[in-house]
Structures are given as C-alpha cells and as structure tokens.
Image (cartoon, helix red, strand yellow):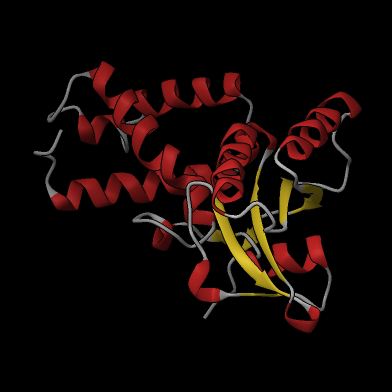
Length: 201
C-alpha cells in the first residue's frame, strides 16, 4: 500500500475527508460507517483512484485504518489529515472550562492524545488531570486515569465524556461512567463538545 503516488494519495484523502465532514463522521453509527466504506470503495474519485495500486478489499481497509480512523484526531487539530478537514472541535481550553469552570486554564505543554488529555491549573495553584472523549472511548479514558493514579495517589482526576449535543447520556450509561471513575478516584463530567466549521481565513 506504500506505492500509491503522493498526488493520488493526497487527492483521495481530500475527497474522503470532504465526505466525512459532510456526514459528521464522528456522530455516525457503525452500520452507517460500514455503508459509507462500501460506497467509498465503489466511488470513482476514491476507490477508482486507488484501484490501480491495491485490490478492492484492501481499499476498504486503507480508508478505515487511515483517514476514517484519523478523523476524530483531525477535528482536534492533530495528525496528518487535520489540514484537510474544514471542521474542528472547540479544543482543550473549552473542555477544561466546561468541565471545571472559568477559573481553570489548560497547561498547553501537557496536552497529549490517544486519548486526549492534559493538566489544568485552577485557583490558588490547584492542579487537575483532565481526560476526555466520547463514551465509546471510556475504556481508554479509565485506563489512562489508572496510570496517572498509579503515579500519584492524590492527584485530582476528572474524566470528561464528550457529546455532540446537550441531551444527557442515558442513565445506565452514565451510571457506568460514574462507577468506573470512582474506582480510580476520579470525578466525572459530561459536556457538549461538537465540531463546527473552521473560520475562513
């Protein structure tokens, strides 16, 4: 798969990301995502451009493990396809403010990914480890919180579940988040964190 010419790779990524933008990919269900992969493989602008360089079954894998997998990171402004999306999340500063309040600020040099996380500073020198992502990323959020807890038994931790709209999570799902967060001694919050179009420069 490494023999795709650079210009073809770029053109395909641009087209795939454009379609993901339109579909609001981060909100799609697994069944819808599967249908979109099938359409991408058959599309002359995507699968048609890749077909001289790989078999049809590998085109789907290339899209799924490449642009589609990287898309949520791209909305955070991170990764190789970030320049191609016309949408963006509000960013770590917004997460910290919504979860902890206006008196908290993000320590920029502590921002990390997979999953997204950082340290925040609050009133009177208070410090907080903040980690965020959608409910589907809960396992990773809790695991990384465990790693922080193992290093510092007293470090305050807040697990933040992000949602594309203001509707609260179903009670059974939120109860699970609360239970797992409490196991690692973490607070938990749910916030509205939706991608929007990037400003035109």
